[in-house]
Image (cartoon, helix red, strand yellow):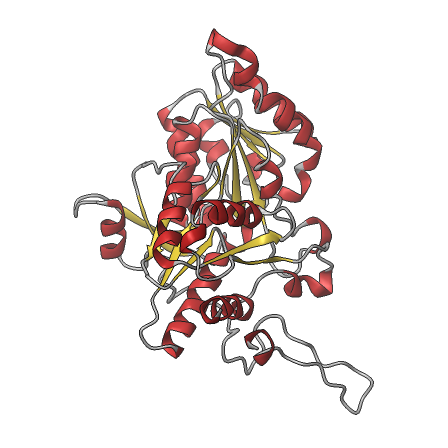
Length: 389
């Protein structure tokens, strides 16, 4: 019932043109409004909130940064901390297409920040070799859509390196492969993909996706300086400039194996990561305003693989209901594995089937891209169906 209630319909006008069926932000939308990044509770918009979140004293510095600046700050800190950290990729010496490495070549020199040829397989392979020799390479893939030629190197070399070395102790931890991912609404076939689930089928690598500037800084520093596994670090490019908040000036690290409860609740667990978290937050706000007394829990997975099963199971066993939201496609996605695990670990507590809201199993054509990814209404509908089951 709820899935049809707010579904917009196409109407033919007197002229032979079709009025747009909005999958996103119609001017008169009641629910599917554009996310207001100035007001979202996901971001740390005050110094007080930032200090509380990271346990900072009044004497410790904060900087107002967007996601691009926070990524750059994290890499700068890692390179200052460890001389073996290097950065390379297509156009990174010029600052990169999203300016995530702006100024780093001037700061650290051409021997540590340099451009690569246009070969993703070569970028990954070079990074693996550097890591095997004890360096900490940050390899940038210009868009996640371009990573597929590097898949053989990541799966058959990077992921298997420590297993293959046996008792020698050798590994290629310290290798971080960064890539901007996800939809921005006009990227079409080759600048819109979210391929994170492909990497979750590969034991030996970690897959991480931050939701905000401060999270990106802490998670990226941990990936480069503290992790003995190669890390696929995926950055939602639609957040590069949209997400701004206070970020600790000094370097800090965040755990690569721990989800974070962003909002506590007792009636329903919503699990997501990256950009869709902002949509989930808006959908939750709308539904809680509509249903008095409703209290929904929102969890940021952060580490997509290996993921924090303990936190998820504890939450779902408490609420008895779960909705999983991600931008990558439904079939064999991150949500499929989580739903199966929840069914195994919380079956007797479930009051409704585990719901998934995800991208459709199609390639994102340019004019249909906004229809392909989850929006606030789809998340709202899934939550309401789950609660009403």
